[in-house]
View 1 (cartoon, helix red, strand yellow):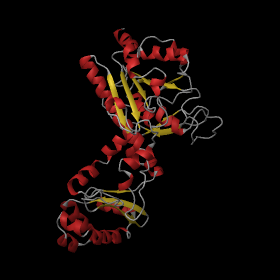
View 2 (cartoon, rainbow, N blue to C red; view 1 turned 90 degrees about the horizontal axis):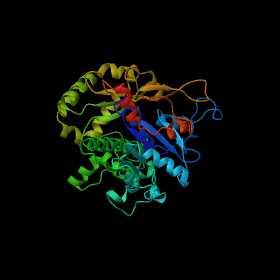
View 3 (tube, one colour; view 1 turned 180 degrees about the horizontal axis):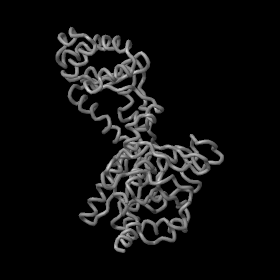
View 4 (cartoon, one colour; view 1 turned 90 degrees about the vertical axis):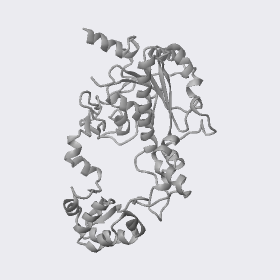
Length: 396
């Protein structure tokens, strides 16, 4: 049993931010009931597929962030399905949605309505710009995606080469980081409820999350009045802390403290650099010259040679692609690749494992993603909460 095995979560979310949040909870053992609109989550049909898109129930996008959940298809515009949803809320611990502000109120299913049914309910929302209940702004109601959040929150402005345009971070951090923060908020609210019996509203905005993710830009601007901008792979206050070309790829080197710098200079057979630039301010003032010196040396070595030479003495790593990640023994030892059944395919699909590790209740993907409406009978015929069932089984 997972750490959250007594928690039932009603998941109204779709696409990435909300499903990733509830995936974290499901990996930790929560019973996550994915309530899907007619036709299901819009990303069910998104590629890639293991083999045959026509035969497989859904693609990798949906599988990855909806593993271990149960599915129920409901049309909240109808009285019958609205009542079915309310019957689930009566026995739920958490409701999560990522609609635009005001959407649930159109169905008369907003926080205040649900709280009347279940005073201990924790209602959580992930929106581009937050909810008026926690701070009203002119942006609320506007649609938002990862790209919008990264642009507004300052992440794109500090990402990319110095002489290039603002660049989106590869993974959807506007969605995923917001989702992780929302999961933290939900668990904090659960803890508060255990102490007080009070439910509450939890709200996480993608824009807010990106400001938090780019936290160093805030204090930098506060201190010097200059808005930080792109510096490629380097760091504004640390050097060397950068990516360097090798003979067969790239490595990153983080030798910014004095001891690591001295060791790097020894490996380069450049005692003159160690003597001339012994302290951080010296290296920062002369970073362009020093970067060129280091780059000339690394280009003459393979990535394996550089790692072998520096590993254990200077922080260094090769820049890996996904095929190399799949081959890395560390990734397998840490169970960061998980195989799940892919309905309609003859082979399994591999998804990212849980990065949260626990000694007694270790999180893990708990099975494949659900088929649309797969669990209707067991959910609508089940009036007892997951927590009640498991407590009864424990008593037995």
